[in-house]
Length: 235
Image (tube, rainbow, N blue to C red; front, side, top):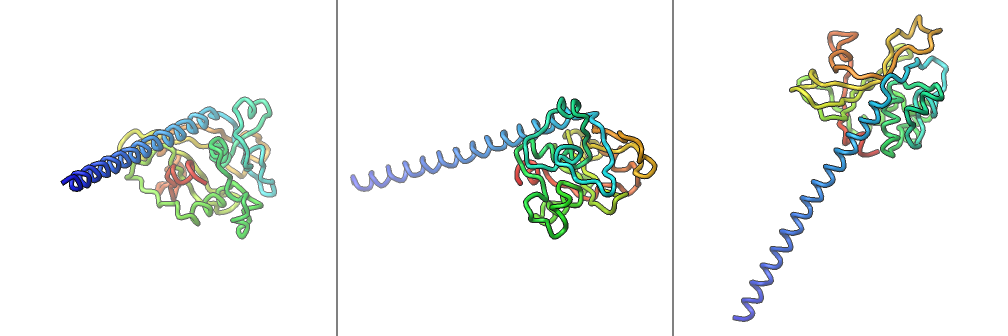
């Protein structure tokens, strides 16, 4: 009889321990989700601090800068005050490279894994970003009927020097689909050709997704998305 009671107590204790572990696992998951949400909110706040920083075209033959324009360097982020003081600028991938730097992540192309497509020569550019995400199976075809989470990356691949591709980031979760959401991106207001002697041709700014996606074509500009957990929360 005593042995049966001992076995019963043992099973009860085992069940309680299992329940506690399950609860701890659940709470740990909840804590991690809160941490991830805070990281995304913080980096978007940082990106917004860069609104109105000038955009300057990357011209054929220009080098990819590590401390200006593309900010293609594995280092800490740069403050808005420093950018203004040193008369620096940001291109489209320069913005997302700075966001990665803010979170302590690396810039695609700098680790040598994309040297077969000149990742070492063009780190942190649209073509290298696209290849980096594609090879890791992190890209999805854009679906304008879907609502995407804050921090989602929008991208179009590099085609040539006049069609350099583009990136933008979703900054809210309003409405029923991406058609209602807003983005932040660094963009040109003046065309590549004809603006050779103009220093600042655009800026970093926020706008409705539709204002950017359908600006040049009724079919839509962006081709793919990458969810925030696949580019802001891990290398």
